[in-house]
Length: 268
Image (cartoon, rainbow, N blue to C red):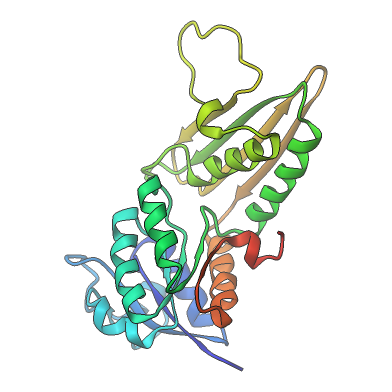
């Protein structure tokens, strides 16, 4: 059995802890580095303090030193941090699984350029179920292309900093592409006041933030006399970590290229 050496960013965060547990429990993966930003209160402490199991790996901010021993870096941080890690990974030849959302068009171009040198899986949501949902949405949109209004509703915990979520936006992109529309031209982000009648070609987005909601997404196709809803609800972050590990394994034999979870799951 080939063992992949995995590095985790944002180790002290909720997603980081979930990933650390998943990697240390996997027989074919080895945790080789746990990373945090300079100034984090967990620096130099053992990963075991976070996951409740002795580990022997100290959390560090010195990623240029530890990354050469890694095969794949799994990153769920923020765009600026991801690009910082990307630069080092590109230099050191370390592959990346990126679940960070909120990238600008320019930042996405930087990721694409880096994929000429290293293999990257970039996805707004690593959940296997969500990515199957993307496939279902493509099928539904093609069949419901006329006479149905489309609305996307998403809900997340109070700490999420971007809206709509990357997953909701990607759902919109999947639906728009299936319908031959440009999401940037038809998206409506919230409504207030006298808005007038709904323009049939638009795709609406509604955002909820509160409590500890892990992630709920629903796409509504509202027609005359019927309504079709395709939903995914995440009950824990374990779904995201398991998908991330599948993505890391997918990259094992890849040298370069930009992939997403549709590639990982063979849904193309």
